[in-house]
Image (tube, rainbow, N blue to C red; front, side):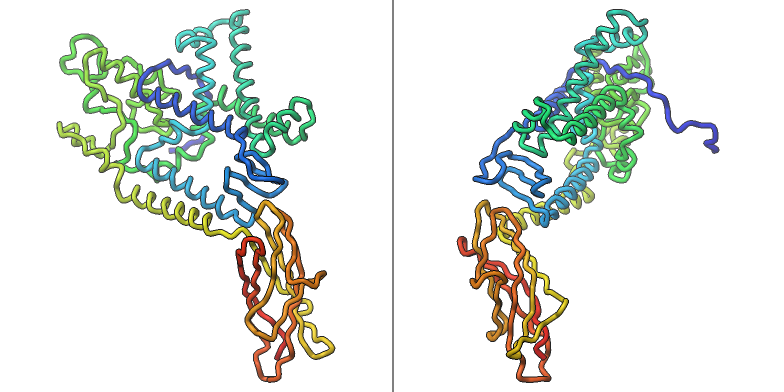
Length: 469
């Protein structure tokens, strides 16, 4: 079939979901409060790390090239921790989608959370669904202008707070807030707040479901994560069809075609039409349908979390399989195992990492120098990293050949002072007598030991000594 002349984009029709109460709506309120609370409050949590270190619990210090998370401090060379957390987040998303469908989209996605908040403000200002529909169709008047202006102002305040909270993660929050108010903050802070506030205002207020349908790639990827055993929001067609209204239910299913499930859907879809790309499995249609079923004296669960593989069993009058059989299956167990292994590996790396680090590069131009007494000298550039909150003396010595000696450039001592939370470059000269055996190998394996003279912690780096043959 040719797509010539057909548009791949449908113009947005405003959606005004009706207020609904129920267990899933309550869960969404709690999760919205939790996620927004974490986002807005976290930059203000203090954490004492000692002198010369920031006391903000969570801080991305771009200038100092450091990431602080409570007692954890991540340096640039430890970016594998961040990469590991991103991989875990991806696997966690695969795991939850495989087991429970798009629960991330329906409950914790930032687009969903802020859209819920904007709809709450909209309902508070303009009224519930019917009132908002009437206001949309009404001609412009002083009342309509006042309601719209009030709503947009509240939206804009939320959007500015959203962008403002984001920049607080990259600088000391109290100091930055004072600078923002007094207009002493750097221009990048104002521009970042403006960009994020604009995006939040537009996405949460005017694009809502369009972001999920057209901009987010996850609806298209989720099909690879789900199968017939995935628990997702679905309509029990075998129980609800044929639909019909009226008290005489002979020959009719349980669905009375009241459209309550459609009216509460933030995506504006009809779950009775089957699985759809736009469905975010927020389960508000379950709350709405359960409320109607109770009123007409029918069992709850006409719309419910269920697996498509159970449809034939339920249609035949058999009970569905236990939930655990859908959740704990090969695919989810593989995701869980991979997620757990990465988590354990990151924890192990975190607890065994040293507070001192060294990188050694042998100087290649020239590879070695022959001194006047016939001895041979190699030069090495050290990068000594002190990850403590105080200055520490580091001693450097070399092993591998008892005749080899190491000397530090600029000092007659074997140790050097490395400032707190800094990286120091130090050149080290290693000297050895010329080999008495001309046929011997010109490469000698050596090992540099770096010792923290305060804590006694030691690390080493293997290298080679050249030019003795």
